[in-house]
Image: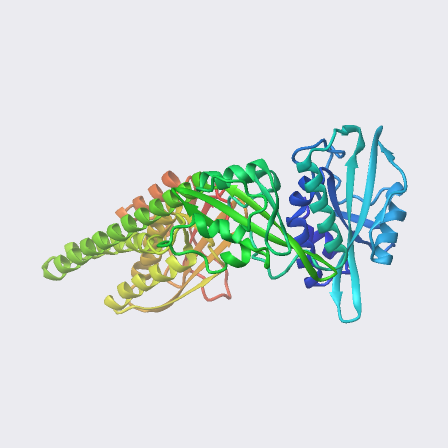
Length: 497
């Protein structure tokens, strides 16, 4: 399915700032839908004087009108005049009487999505609220307050006061929603309404009284331990003066808060504060952080141990008198060092994935040492990108490529100057790597049966479920004509990076 950016950009009438504004508004679609107990749809104008839906959010606690996704569809004829009027006049337009939608009575409100500019307000789209009148119940005080909050936000959308681009961006796990807990503040920061869930959340962090009538800033200052460091922006948040998010913690309980200042034509009139008990989520996050740190430390220690083994092999190689034994030890050292490179990369990040382009660049430096030791001048170059790979792919691939490139230098170039090219070609389902050199080609056209070849076959075919082919390049007129080419193909059906 197309994203909001794709749908908006396809109309060719919106700037990047307009798209960012629409993204912010669509991100709060669930809040608007839950507060108004209605479906929320965002429309943008098309080149042929119509409108297309770019976002749709269903209410969490009420019946939806749209059982099928309408994103990407054009505005229906019965709403078009109302939506166009809201867009052109830059004012809210309500339907004059209940309308019927698929045998359900509805009421539609069209709200212009406005941006404040020097010349005044400019509409970049329209938000419609579709209320299901067939699901009418006697409204509670909470529902009336929620509807009032929704109306305030709709008014702010029409005057360019919402969303606020200065508010923190990006979804955060555990961000509070209206149903989690809602507090309404007046312009002085006094609580005029607190939902039962909001009151429960504050009770759990140590406030046993009623919230209504209290100044929320005083309440939080009573709850928080004096010795604990708190977010310096918290007083501004709980007074409703700025759009911000923060956590408060007391007695092992963590409550996440989000403040949304309410304005009337730019003048602050109060605020909404959403709250949610996120103790379990934050504990899980802390456990994950501890686990990640432990895994990084393990990778770091494994890397150190492997480097120690590689150093011991190098020392032993220098002291042996047998040329064959020395070569075997140096090859073993290089294999261990290649694995250490992967663990070193994993020890630097939180994810168990590695940037294999970085890993392979370090592997090539190991190969350069081999070339220098054998009086070979190897010019290596890499084209294409490997991308990000999980560690279970990175380790065998790094080791296999080390063997292949080393073999190209040791046997293909064999004490002379030449080129080795590595070409990586990746799509969603497959990674293909070609290693070719300007050497003498395969001896007698046959692939060797040595330990290195066996290792490569085992790694590529056994561990990576891939294929590998050796061939002599027969392309007259190119620098690699007569050299050897090794082609590796690895399926990536379990990887999405």
